[in-house]
Image: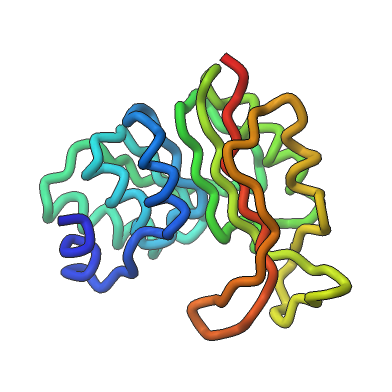
Length: 188
């Protein structure tokens, strides 16, 4: 069902790490940070999450709003929001931030991570997937921001690391690069 909704609107399937995380995370209030056209937000909505979907691109938010209206979806709230501001105004049980950090202002990433953590409910989860730039795997893409080895893990001291790896993966365009993947649970 979820794939059909995304494909019907020309969207990619939900990110594989979002799909995996949802096998253990109970539906509740979720935030899709850097939602683009809403592939993850739509997936989460169909699982029963109340989703706030934010992106800095008004065109992407308008497209998601159109899908939400056409489909009569009442648990996705698309909003134009500059993630760099690090000014979330609600708390969430699940915050997904997949392939988003690398497009942010590098000087703001630490504040964004701290803001995500502060706005995660006790016992809630953060999922982050972000490109890395390491000596073994220099990043071939000119992203404004990339993580260094251990940097993401170090930002989540005191949280339970449900999943953490720094594996080489392939982007949509075929580029091979190293990604840090973190699923962390805030202490209850």
